[in-house]
Image (tube, rainbow, N blue to C red; front, side, top):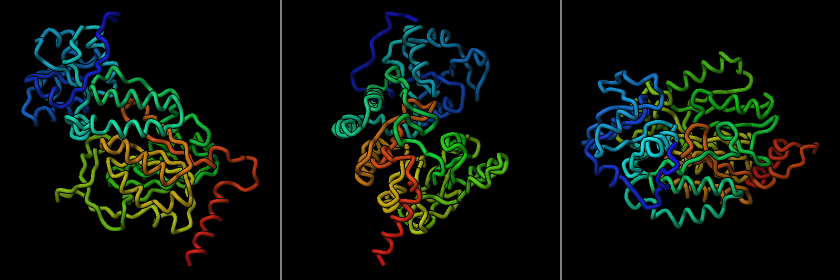
Length: 396
């Protein structure tokens, strides 16, 4: 590693700087690199080749383009840009800039239609006052430091800012009092995908939990059911083909079954692929008297609508909430504000899933769950169930 590598970028960059080049190399001979190539091509740019951190792929061909070694790419031209299409963003940037001496102004992060929204000119500058407010709400130094690194990354598009949050546990867990589901927890997993979070939930609860697994994308739902059957979890996990939303009805979904997560999203253009029922979390759980202890949510940008449809559940059941806040630039502030308002008083932490270090997940822990006496004869689920019944009685 070159100890004289350039300092981290501090000046703002945006799509304007990314698109000023004519020729590019996609860093990542994988589905992420394919997304980068597709986005650049759609914007009239030429992708000359792939490169990859794995030497095993060098010298191969991917979708008609050569996969070159990084050293070969750096010899192509001083006028090409490198766009990272791998979750190993910091590692790729460190290699190109620190080892091969590529000008950091020629290295850019993962770009696709969703992430490009974060890179629009001026968007991060407009968000700065909101970032300062949210940062002040975060409950520990590690969360604030990680938040600072991620917002610096979005402002400068320099992936070298990114390092992992040391208090993250698994995909959505966090090393803080009350932040993880405990034994006998009632868990609602919104965006259950194919059950990838089940091992974390089972580990945290010693296998003593009940998981309502909401998955709206039918191909993923099929895989979810297969996994539950294969792992013998029929008495623990209960799949639900429904989208959490702000109201009851039907949504239309698009997705690519060939991609692991389907890149599933709500279709607003009318070219529907799947019609799926949607309902509110209040209707699905609170109004049925189900006291939820832990809510996880990652649903490709529809998080605010789903949270709004669970407002009563949040205020009355007061679960721990772990929610993805990276799908839209404004979510970094909107979701933090919503959780702080509807779960107050609560502690708020910022972390990420294991691989995507530039994501932010918020983990909101209601105050009473941080101090609950676990030796009490009255459990949290029992206490909250009685509380819900009392609220219903007052409303009748």
